[in-house]
Image (cartoon, rainbow, N blue to C red; front, side):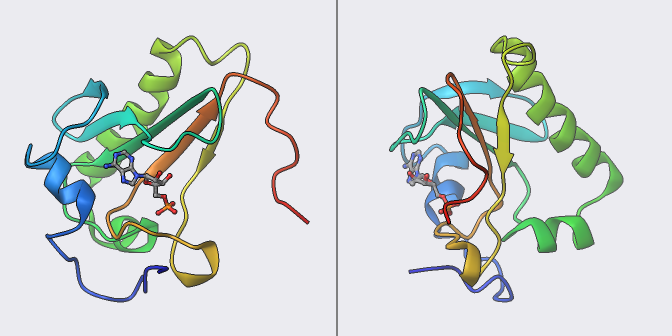
Length: 125
Ligand code: AMP
């Protein structure tokens, strides 16, 4: 069921539980602002999710309400994860589904990082 991006934050969502350590994850990177972990159902040879530590439903919520430090910290973390994984030269793709038409499933902002092979066209037509 796709997320309604206008709803308030639900602290029972699965990524909130991961941040609280209530369910396991395969962590790639963590700092004060972000956690990066392997997607449980990878769509590419490398498929990592990067999430902010703050309680934000989606990109809209985050870009409107997060502090400058949270935004800078999160964006830098996404870049660092890709760099640390050696993905700058081969290339990678970032994706942040937001709301119903994008089929966002988890109502905590996450950026998908896809890599490891040529990724094909941007959208299925
Ligand atoms: P989205 O459709 O953009 O909301 O993507 C949600 C992503 O979260 C999907 O790629 C799922 O495979 C992934 N996912 C769901 N539960 C978990 C979990 N427990 N650990 C890691 N990834 C998960």
